[in-house]
Image (cartoon, rainbow, N blue to C red; front, side, top):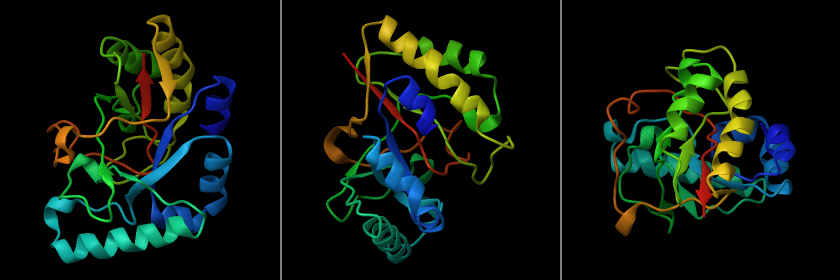
Length: 195
């Protein structure tokens, strides 16, 4: 994914899991070195609606520690499945506006057709560069294949792919739609688009 973003001369934001950063710290470092944002997703991929506040806090602290080990001090948090409790650690909650559903293994052209209709200033496109709970694919090739035509479609509308991700209005809690609330997340590649 990093290579494809470089070929497209585009930057994105990766919301990462701490356990994956610990397993492959070079990937997080490479994203930062390439000019992408690396932000907090969690330590493990846990559904916050099923956890006590103390459990969320422990997971968040572990993730922040893992990110600190690679020199990242996140300012944003995109909770697993988009289900969040009030943000702590002075992190700003973010959410997506376009879900590619790439975790299902959909073909790039089908994902592009759905996403293209929703491209607008400030849109945030949710894509996954890893496999997680509920993934219905064996790899992430479909997501990599989607990047170039999606970036081209955004640019054709006068939009510029950007790493910055809009926040949830009012900094409040936002739940994912029922279609996306029970699906896979791992490292995330939201691609913000700005005018």
